[in-house]
Image (cartoon, rainbow, N blue to C red; front, side, top):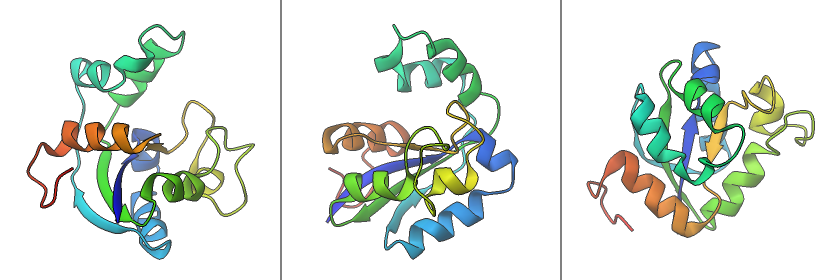
Length: 139
């Protein structure tokens, strides 16, 4: 078993899709280890997305992620990072496979409903960012 971080982004929360996305994740076989609702400050969003600081979309991303509540979720399953990325689909919902979360609930490439860790190492770092070392079996 491994873990990954999902974040239901402000667009999906505002659209009333959080429950549907959580049900989709559970239906796909993920176990929720931890979950909470947060409203990120600019500083928190900037720190979380610091890896993108030099990218042209960084400012827009930080602004978007602070626009309303978001729901970080620590998920567990076999090969969690790869399975979650398959479950959510491509970043651009127009390119996402049918039945994926982004195909079903994303508005655009920039407002794409969910965040997903891209590696086991980043998943561990991202889970600690939101949940500290408070989780049983924290990695």
